[in-house]
Amino acid sequence: MANATPSSNIIVHRAGNSKKPNPFTIVIVSNPALESTRGSGHFVIDPITANHAAFASCAAYIETSLFGGLPGQAPALLADPAIAPEVRVVSLFVTGLAAVDANCLVAEDNVSNLVMTRRTRFVPFLASYGLSGDVIYAVTGSTSHTRASAYFTSDDDAQPGNGFSLDGVAFCHRYEYIIPGTIALPVGSTSITAVHEFGHALSSYSNGMIVDLYVDDGPGVNSKRARPIPPSFANYDGTVMGSDPVRDGLGYPVGWQSYHCELLVKANPAIMDDYWLAPGGVPEACQHDRITEQFLKDRLLAKISRP
Image (tube, rainbow, N blue to C red):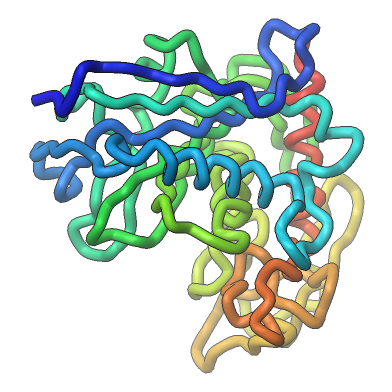
């Protein structure tokens, strides 16, 4: 059932390239309904729908962190003057919708405290408000599940893009998607959490996944598996990038088989790693490792270059 008369509020935070019919767009939406728990088919009204002020504050936080405006934050990818003017940022606050499948963008995981997107619901839901986005944040007020998560983009591999090679294999930074990158973000998120999840969501199932570095994960663009660790991590589009042999600042736990690319700043963990362990308790100072930074930048440049 609905919790009030349905209403919506759309705010354009950044216009992006208004000359293009389809500029690269980030959408921030309040999640209307939660699936509690994932896979249960049981839907409840998301508490965020009753707290417009908290949603607005979270939307402002997301934009600020993505464009490098947090206190002490390292240079941010989206702040690049070749990228920033091209990026459109829109928020949508909705309230009063029924707690049904079609209105549910976020699920509470059944085995952890993660909130997780129901990624196939995003395109039709936003279309009903005349919106679409390449990366979409669904902000939730879940009181029991407080960790963010993201799913990679499903590229439209039938469409053009900018080709690149990774270790001699051809890939493509596609201009278009079938399913956008989606992020479930608790309303109380802080520091560079929104930036970390953006790294996942912008990457691609078919053309390169940016994975977490704080678990023994891989394979991904930014994580491989081998022991001993080789000196070279990858050949990205003709540039050989080195490995991080000691996971600078953190160290690889005993028994791990994964290893990472060299860091841009060795004093801090990578953004996709456990940034909460940054020296001095300043995770905002963290940056991406070398291959993640270049891969995400190239992917952004491809998407903002589409007609």
